[in-house]
Length: 201
Image (cartoon, rainbow, N blue to C red; front, side, top):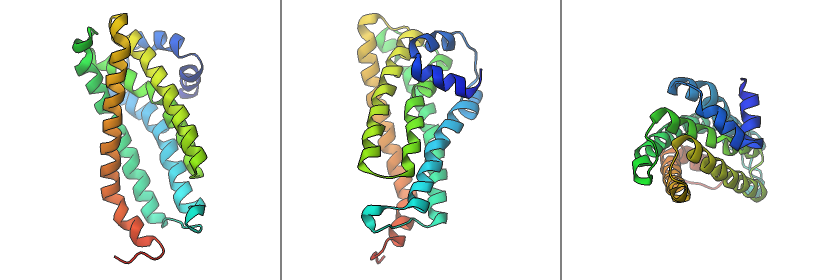
């Protein structure tokens, strides 16, 4: 199955696709290299174009320098892959607490594939604006729904615990996202601020 077909099925028929995914044997390296990396790169490339080529209209058309934008994109991409891998470990570690089945391979599949809607929405970064942020939230919401279905079918918690399992995983994901942004900001923010009009370090 091609990555395009998988993406379409995850987004359009997630319940059916999770059943297919549940029976697949895919290594962590293959999942990250052949699926997560290309999709996470969508947001990284779009974000680079948005901040370094298109620019910020609200800041008078300010553009982040090309080199700084590239560094930011690469760091963000690397941290995204680390984040999804760690989330898979967390899903597996939490499984016994919710009566689910422990399985690192299944947990990583849930983490990786449930990020699909969010990674696709990364293309909106080409035009930084409030509207793109709103659409990103819609994609995030749908991703949570996809995550819920994946946890139920691959980790197999009791039905009455599936929702709280999802909520806890989402909260962990939010925490990881905050840490990711703090790390990325610590690495790239000084260069970005130095390039901004009127900034004096």
